[in-house]
Image (tube, rainbow, N blue to C red; front, side, top):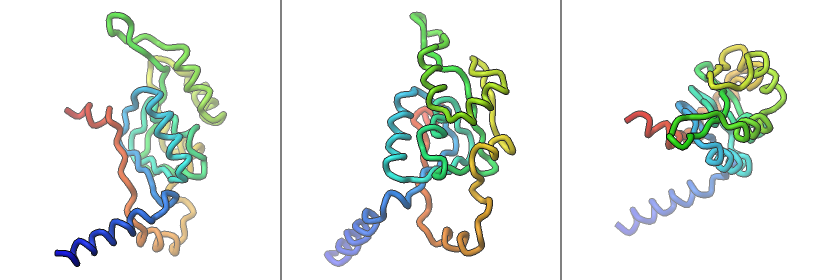
Length: 174
């Protein structure tokens, strides 16, 4: 039992010694949520040096990843889809109303290339607009593009990426 505990402790130390720069956040079904939560989350990702793989829906406030995480640390798979809309907040009766202050905050964080794309597609409004496929490829690097056989082989030997799901995405499933 003592040896087994020592082995487990050793494995834990090895796991903790892996630098956060080698970790990966995988976004697969994020429906967004409060802007402040995403500001904190993606600021921490930026500080840690983590990479981000967008592998499914990244909607609403989740799209702040584009302005908060360095461009070279983000890639998108073929399944990636980003959804943009104006920020909103509940009125006194709980009905959603557009928040000019929140929308301005989103706008100021997005990179110029994203703002241009949003403008070409009608701007930020209550209606969700989606960026995916070739349009997304013009903004975010493909996770597969330009990767050599050697790089793919090395990647297969690396630890599996960390899966990230927002609290709002998991609570919406119930």
